[in-house]
Length: 241
Image (tube, rainbow, N blue to C red):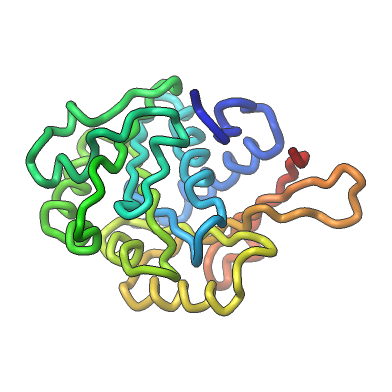
């Protein structure tokens, strides 16, 4: 069962089209450097970063002959296994500690070309594990097997974990929950990402309810950082549940 993954459940919906627009923007975000490893974070909890991560991964997996991995990088409060209704008995932490190998932990999905790597046992030292040489080497090795790797990370505005991951992956996407995120918290989150030299690909404005519509639509917006905001922005509408 795939929960809350609109890109899979309703691929022809406006919101699925919005994710495809985000996909296109990410594909063309860096002309000189290849973007294969992407971390998704937010300023605080409940802004929908895990949902965005899952939908982006599904959207990229629908590209012809592409292999995509979605990895749970939230070693404190993992949610990827719940998004896809799979077991979290083994995962990233078991691989890094040498208890299991990758093939024993990775899951296939209903989406062709999409694999899922859950968190596994919650460690006592998440930050140290995410910043370890083993983790960096593991993520780098994954590039040899997947076209894109999406990492669902904890909110960067709360703990340092997402910033650690952002320092060694190819790109970072910041999810901002409309009417939920605090503007100052978002600014602080961006500053923290800048301090670790994160390659910020852009931001996703999530849960935006358009005004002046009797049908209560939700819009999702993606914009590039700095002066690319207006040029690259994409708008789409989703009917409210």
